[in-house]
Image 1 (cartoon, rainbow, N blue to C red):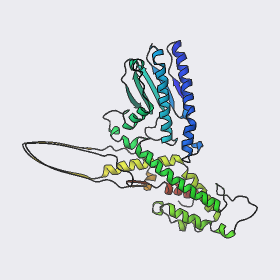
Image 2: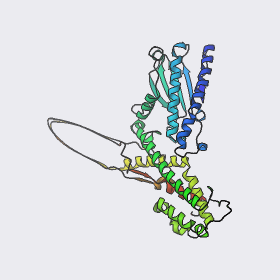
Image 3: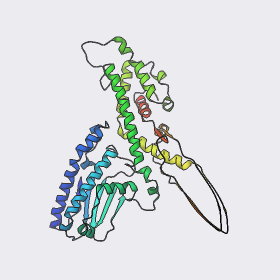
Amino acid sequence: MAKALPPQNPAYTAFLEEFTNYTTEALRHQNPTVSDSLNRRQIPPSQVRPLERAYQISLKLGKDLPLTPIKKQILQQIDAVVYFLRDFHIGVLGQRTSLFHLYEVEIQVESHLRYQLTFESGKLLIQIPYWQMAVLDRYLPDQKLKYRWHRGNHLPRFSHIRKIWWLVDPIGELRYNLRSMLVLGIQKQILGIDELFVKFNLLDNGNQKHRAVQGDPQDQTELKNHAIAFLKATVKEEKLGVNLDLVLENQDDATIAQLLAVYKKNLADIEQMEELIETGAFTLQEKLNEEESQVDVKMFGFVNVGNYHRIDVAVNVSKDYLKKYVDVIPRKTDIKAVQFGFVNVYTIDDITVKPNFHGALTLNFETAALERALKELELVQ
């Protein structure tokens, strides 16, 4: 939704009312695009909040500024913010994230401002000097806004968080790739469950369909065997900590069908998927912090100047109960330097940087979803 800050005169009142209406309609206009994009990822519409309810755009104008020279640019800035929020909403699959989630964007236009982005408690501030907007037609296009967001330009320049922004950025490359990887896996699992439902004539809730002609009784008794084979082929029992054969061998077909239905429901729970991504990202950070960097510098000469920096930031908001479903292959660092000469100057900045997460981080969401289903049906403790 849009929020107009208190007006200062009748001209502002009329303009801010126009701003509010324009912003609300612009957000609503992007909802079909968001829905289409998330539908292709099999995200149920019921799990996605409309843009005008999920985000707020506000405007703060300096006192007694002439409105006519900047009206067009403000509307352009609104459009840019709406496109950015649309892509942000798609990027996080319509869910809220635990860190650096965006709730509001405030456009600030005043005489004494720097052209910059800042981020405070879920609010992104776009600050533009009045003279630049009025004279240079300046605003921040959506692609530049997205670029600056990914670069961490909205964070303090020397903050520790900015150094690991690749890790915590809700719509950054790491988390985007993790979401894409999990969504593909989830779609495959759901397709496999649906195929079992069709084969054994079951509804989505696992109940038997009403039918005039009964199927082959032998097919009905094979549901358990097919379901166990499917689950064992697609989850990791060592992560699960139970033997599926032992747990399910004495269950009747109705219970097996119900388990498949609950498992399918849990696979479609995007909120828990986001929790696992959060856990995976910060488990990766923990592993990178734990790695042993060996630095061996030998220097000979009249003047030796050394500078070694190991920069790590420990941030941990991960869910402990999900950690067993995260596998990390940490990097190893071994730095050796030997220098000779009259003046020796070295600098080594060993900063934990983004690894190639393919093969470095594995999330076992399918197994986590099955464990949750087994516990919901009280089949395991």
